[in-house]
Amino acid sequence: LSPNFVSAFAEYSKRVVEALAPPPSNVKIWITINEPMVVVMAGYAQSVFPPGLNDFGRAPLAATALAEAHIEAVRKIRALKDPAIRISIAQNWVRFFPQNERNPIDRSLTHESNEFYNHSFIRAVMTGDINIGVAFWKPARKKVALPEGRPTIDFLGINYYFRNFMSLKSQPPFIEQSQGDGPKTDMGWNMYPLGMYELLKEAYARYSLPIMITENGLADRLDDRRGQHLRTHLAAMQTARKEGVPVLGYLHWSLTDNFEWAEGLDKRFGLIEVDYLTGEKRPRASYHLYGDLIRKHGPELFITRSR
Image 1: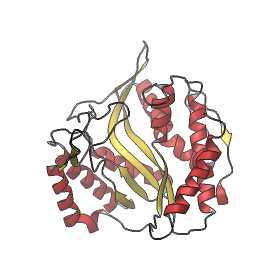
Image 2 (image 1 turned 60 degrees about the horizontal axis):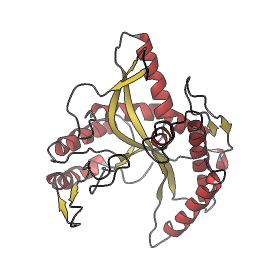
Image 3 (image 1 turned 180 degrees about the vertical axis):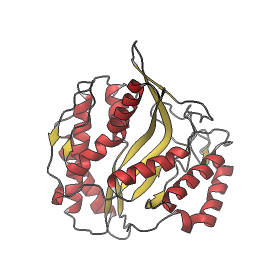
Image 4 (image 1 turned 120 degrees about the vertical axis):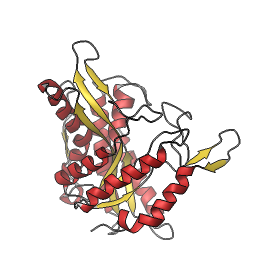
């Protein structure tokens, strides 16, 4: 929300790319912002993440600033004239379903949730027409000229973890979300691999861009569900690829156990277990399984260059 955020972020992005894009680092794939709608909703509308605000008046301003910051960062990065660089955001996608398929209000809420949460930020950075909001949350609309007059993402970066069933209630907080039946992760998220296939098909049909799964995984302290999760989600991705969706790659979250903003060190997402007292790192069984899957199916699962 700082008035100099957009320019400061753009300059920061330029300097990082200048340092790492040329040899010997030679980094060519860049994500400017990870999960912008999570940043906005959790940090500015739900007081779960930093800066811990619960302000539906200022949240649209934060969303607008993030979109504008991405656009300005791309303007500076493209000015470096490296034709090999590819840029995107990593957008957290949720598969939304109505709690009651026969209820038109639930169906409408599901549609609006999908458009707002999954698509509005992508539309903003593709068109420069920043209009991120819903009926009860008035957007801070702004139009920004796109660098070179073309979309500021070269591929879609998608993080996928779970689905939500949506229902409108007569009592506060009015909107109810649930995970539905089925196996859950340690975060309480429903494991729904079909959602990987569904979102890939939807995203490509709408935007006609190559797609990279920039995050997918689960919190699983005992490592007793991660192997099945890997197999089923990679299979869903492969089905979409066979049907013509150009998936550039798959990045598993995460290599090691990590710090989560709201849960701290409690939830274990890693293929490698970390002992936070000693610093020792121990590969889990899923680590070895993932290696086997890559060695066996790598050429089929992953595209190494964009088309």
